[in-house]
Length: 387
Ligand code: GLA
Image (tube, rainbow, N blue to C red; front, top):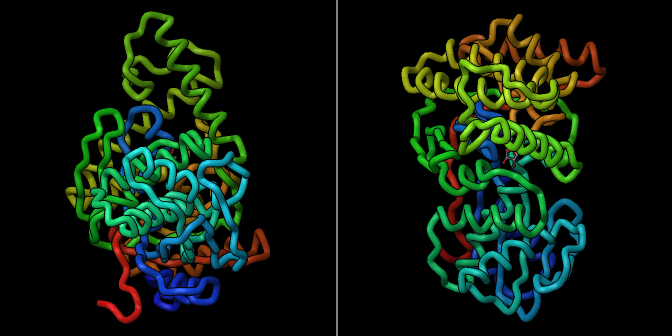
């Protein structure tokens, strides 16, 4: 158990050391971007609904220098991969970086090549947006190399295009927007239907418990769910509903007349949108008890209607409730990753240890747990010898 991961080496120090080990010459730019949790509002960002994410204390850093071709190394394996952004995607991790380069080029940022070192303290596949953090950080570091001045909103869009258009994960914009625009001490209410954003203070700490179950967005379940939501919207429009998005279907007309699986997906989307609106009001009023209750309801909807949970997460959420947490839910795309737990600060240490032990008795391993406040979005990182 750890608070704000003080023992975790800083991602930017690790990326600088990796750069020095892997490439000749000096780095010319460095940037980092945070992982995120979504407090509530799951699978709404591609359905036109509101989401309520915040940045966490763990980050991904990218250190870069200009070059004649593109090459990148990640601290994960220390192997330098040469890639060609003009060529086809190869199923390699550097596809994400190639996507960033292409999206930057579309905005007139031209680079003949670059050497990039990437290091991260965001657990991969942990549902904490381990892919938006590097793309947003890379967009910032590469833009700095060419002295392009791109605002945070443009960086978010560049990173989203890299993942959505180039790599082909049909994600929404939540992860990139929070990684680029997060403000310390604040969660972000982001209405993906209108694009409106409102920062809401999040003063306390949130606990994160890693189920240890890993799922990658490229595995297919995510795109399948998105396809089902699109099918539901098409079917409702064919019935005569004039809807800008699935989230706009009226709450008081649930369940919709659709095949059972599509009706469940649509009911999740519509009820979840309503929960987010209540949750945002509760957070603004510092009513953590109500926020927690809504988080747990959100989890149950993700489990039963969206069918995107996993047993380990269900066990943790249920146990957290019994142990006196305000609420808990699986955050991110689902099918594994991290359970977030909101609980009274004075009980936190006791409840989290008990939660880990209960999990340990069932699964024979102690899940990692840590806490975080709301952290900051993308930023430049200092280079050695400069301030
Ligand atoms: C992933 C995607 C996001 C969002 C969530 C589910 O994190 O990248 O766009 O759809 O899943 O809420």
